[in-house]
Length: 358
Image (cartoon, rainbow, N blue to C red; front, side):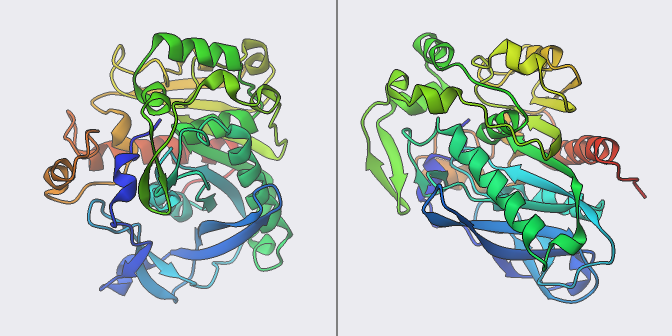
């Protein structure tokens, strides 16, 4: 659930850089907006990708020293028509711009795509104490839906009857819960009693990130989390379809809540059968949901969902103390894995949200 925690302190993120070839940016527009959310007490930074006509400023979204970005046209005019909305939730310690490779593919396929950087669990602003507060992430996603469907600058391009969600890792937890799943705090605490890697290692590690700086933090006792908030329903009935990639809290969902989910729940695990970590294994979750599907992407791992890495990035990360294999090679090139994921996710959302592919 936390593939980018150490990377949080590297000064690498450039949200958008100049694109030398404007022809590469046709058909995908991108805008950075702020969304007010009373629950947070601060505005959310939200990136929106959308089907566009020619125009705008060519940029590379998410391009930085470690990762390759994806081309788009900043503030390009909307293409005509109304499109389903897909809200996205990034992994712990990451940023929404790291999902631009997928957002771009969805925009080309006929979706408006919007995702916030979640305060408290985003790059440079991430602590163990904030990580289990899934209710804050679902509030963020609902606030994005509220804003875009109410704003006349956006709602004319959005089909508000067809809204989906895509979440990765901790973002997959948010997607689970906004679709109707509920978590059990004691089950999650027992999981971390027995398992000391991934999210549980993060809770025990004594390290966090505030204002782009690493800070020391106390060990998090999961049983001190607000139980009522952790176990509450975060269902947003406007969500009509969900794609869940390596969803976190996999061992902690209440089975009865999964059985009551009425929408398509499309689960994707990254890795060969038997290699997927217990914190995100999703085959049983798919079997419990009435309209669940399940796919495991062979030759990949959890980090394969991150953007393609630049040449030499793996060595650079190791030189600054990064311990997670963020840019290490798997059995298949990351670009090939992304192509498979794009096809899976795009076709799933086209089918479940009523969009016809070209």
